[in-house]
Image (cartoon, rainbow, N blue to C red; front, top):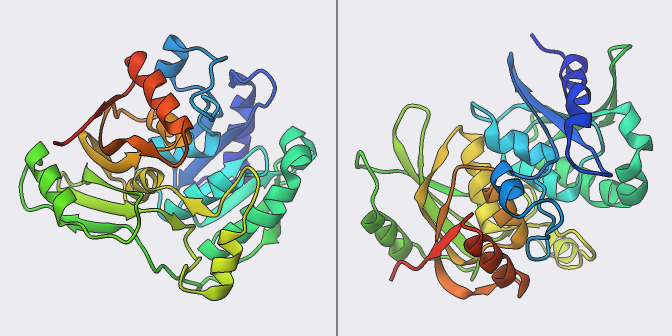
Length: 318
């Protein structure tokens, strides 16, 4: 059975393999004896076509190490543990929460490295708060001593509230089609302008539909006045909200589902960051409700970049 020190060492062993010229980060995700390791890096198909220097819309082209692990884990991520070489950013905290990660271990040397110096306030003010609300315990690991020191410990019986969970339903047929995607889109009624849906295969070979809308990280309620103030007043680089396509990606990983390429729909263009994350999967085609609308103008820029490079195809269902 893997220990936190063992798994953290696996991440440390590969961190210098990252292609990033200045900020090299690695992560290991494990449950039982199943483990996967990733560095922060450009998705291979993006690296081969657009290279390292081109930003995708308003996003870098790299997939964070933690997200790379979640999207490529060969089993359900629910209840798994994540080990990282550096303190995790709020975006990774939100992804880990949606993916059902229960514990995060951070190598002790990471607290003296570049990200901790630049983004330490974000880790304290957002990442740890998101983890606490989601029921994720966080520890510091000293690998050589095998010592684990608590940073944040969540009660074992804590169940995070969810007022807008991803809606998952079993599909009756053996194979979903584009007509089924149209029916799914037309049958959904959500309050948010930004939402997404699609089909996925389960580990047992069944097909399920998933529907997700823009929402704050798991554990935060938009019906709570206090929570609403917190999530509405977030400023700077990070937000407490998780975008709908990212929710689909992380929510599918939680249960070991694999989203079906060509059967995913989004009401608006995904954000630049979502598009980069999508490139870490096998997805190549997205159906879009309004192809000229997104969270910001950078969504249109990213769409044009990736479509021109042949990396993603954006289509209309109509």
